[in-house]
Length: 418
Image 1 (cartoon, rainbow, N blue to C red):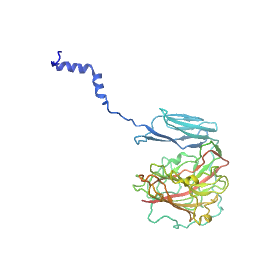
Image 2 (cartoon, one colour):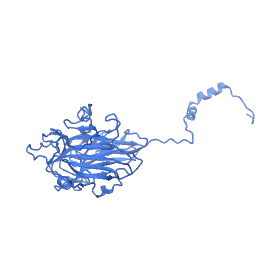
Image 3 (cartoon, rainbow, N blue to C red):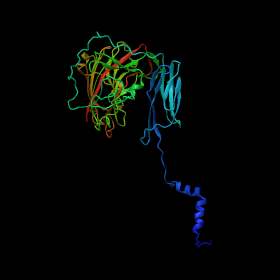
Image 4 (cartoon, one colour):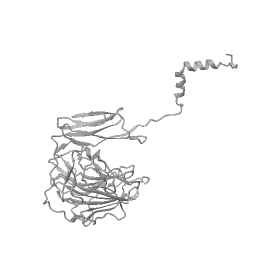
């Protein structure tokens, strides 16, 4: 071919060249433009739940795997598992071995970029549920009569539990009218079936909806440093969605009755958590209703403002009783072995401002009255209450339970307003 002269190649030759070189042809079409960079989503969070669990030899337990991707997905990828003191499947089903002790279950991404650990304590034989208290147990002092509660009239019912049955994967959330739904878990998440130390009992003296009560067992044993113990989880699903409707509740009313066993042993760090009230948002905000106290000493009704980084009262012990009536209510010394009727109203307030509110009543007496809480520091975040998480936690930082003790709940009810 001479410079400047155009030669025509026959069409048949072009077709033959294309047929002989399919690889070259396809590679041209599959190449991305040199200026285009494709970003594949990556896993940003890997977490196992619960953080610690106690099992009998040979008992199986399904760990819950929480995954977050950079594109918002929550699909669980293939993980690399390892387990001490037993065996774990590729899906996180752990089978305890025959030797008692404290062990680790570890899950990692195949890349090794993220990893998380659950502590498992393998104990002796399964502890049977304790008997209910004797019928001659002393009556509750100053129990409010039916209809004499402090639920605001304009709050709409959200959900409730009578604890007449235990939720499972087969009887699950059910259906029915609010506030109490049909089905084993009465509209709640059915995760409680996984925990052998979540049990049901019968007590005719229960103050709200006898005789069925929820009983959470705390068997004796030592726990490694940095760990906590929880009998398990009984929680609501998110308040927003097809189960509970599209409303977003910035005001929440909670009513329950609880009782710690007569031999209750407070954790050495004073941390005896009862109920988490969770919210959405960038900051994982969850006020925690708890009892502060050590050993057999006084137990104080208290709220920890966990996830509220600019409300520094959390650093100094949270919100203690602060009303004139609190001293005579028992909130500074929760009596072991007695039912306590608890009511609370949480108001988120305006994000970025210290105008959130908390009011709590114990057996009908106002014990906590706070109106200057900064739940959420970012004014751009729209927060609302999303979940009630009944996951009593003893600890952390290790500790030892000396003898079997338990925590009872009779009825958990919630209502709310925008």
